[in-house]
Length: 176
Image 1 (cartoon, one colour):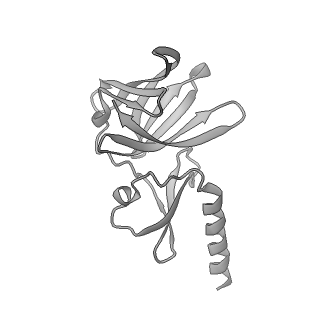
Image 2 (cartoon, helix red, strand yellow):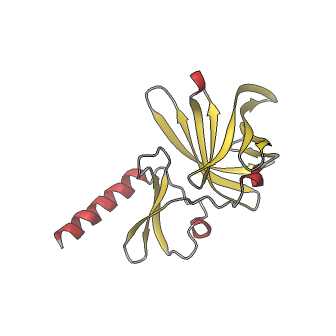
């Protein structure tokens, strides 16, 4: 009984510390169909550098959802453009090799001028679609995971990788 109380305290602490990364904008019912989700958060539980969905169901059980990408095929993104904000644009171009990777351009645009731009590749890794935009010395400057694409909206999160810290932001992008 004592172990259950400790586990419940751990779960509450985990959710309190990571809820800032999760957003009610995610269509969690679509992603985790068949589950009765009460609360959720995003966190890297297996040390692979990719966040999983950690959630509490209606029975108070903590569960971890892995491989939650809603798209069946990376080709769904080919030749599409998405706005993460009014200024940040993510373009998926053609497929390099059928079914493997898509070239991407991530740009910051203000008053019609491109101020920052990075190129990279979108690929499927461990069942999740991931976009890595190249930074200094070939390291990713931005890593983007998306959770679902429906009704012209892309929902997910991205990591802005800097030298001393990585910041995680949720987003709801709109298709151009």
